[in-house]
Length: 318
Image 1 (cartoon, rainbow, N blue to C red):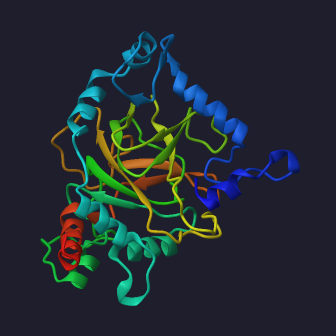
Image 2: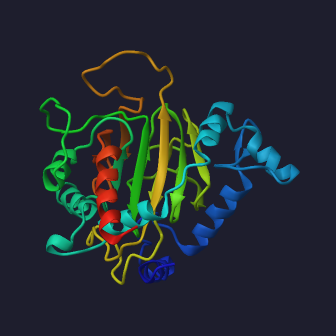
C-alpha cells in the first residue's frame, strides 16, 4: 500500500470526517466488501464469483458455475497475453513524471486529459482496433504516418471491442456502466481494485470489492456486474491523488485488457454512438453526481503506442 493510500485509509468516519475517494469507505467497510466478494454474489440462489478462475474445491466450483460460457471463452482467449519486459518498461518510462523533452507521450496525454476533465484522475484508453484521439499528436511528434480520417471533435474512433487501459498509481475511474455488453477485465500488470455496484447512481449499493493481479480476470454480462469503479492502489508518491491533485508523482502503473461484445454484433455502420453497446457507456460524475454519457473514444491506438515503445526500447538497448 502506498503512503498516500495509508493516509487515505487512516481517515475515521467516527471522527466526523467522511472517507474519501475513490470508494468513500472505511477500512471496516472495505474488509466486509472484500469478504462479500470472495464468498460470491448470489445469482439465481447460487453464490457467483466476480473473478474467473479454475476451481480447486467444491465451493470454488459452485462460485464459478453461474459464470456464462461466452464469458469464459473470452477469458480463455486472453489467458496467455503478457507484456514483454521491454513493453512494460517502455510504458513505465512514458507514463512517468518528467519535464521538457524528458516527459513521455503518455504523461503528456494524462496532463491534457486532466485539463479537459477535472472530475477524476485520468487514465489511458488504448484502442487495439481503430484510431485514438491523440494519434495525430504522437505521429507529429515522432514522425509517424497516419491513414486519412474525417474531421470531428474527436480525432479517434469510438466502440473498439478490444481496449488496453493504463492506470497510473492512485488514479481511478468514475463509477460507470458498460450497458448491456458482455466482457472481461483481464489484469496484465500491476494491481487494480474493482468495486462492483448494484446500479448506476451516486448512492448505489456497493456489491463487492476485489483486487486483480496479473493473470486474473473479472467479468460482466448484461446487467450482471455491469456497473463498477476501477482504482490502481499502487504507490503514487507522497501526495494523495484526488479531486485536488489529479496527477500522481510516480512511474508505477497497472495495465488491464478489456473486451466488450454487444448483444447483437450487426454489420451496420452508425454515424452516432449507440447507447447500451460498447459505442457508448455511462458514468456518474464525481463532482455533480449526475449520470453522464461516455462515447468510448480512445486516447491512442495500439499501433502508434507500440511504435513509441519500440523507439524507447531501441534507445536503451533492450
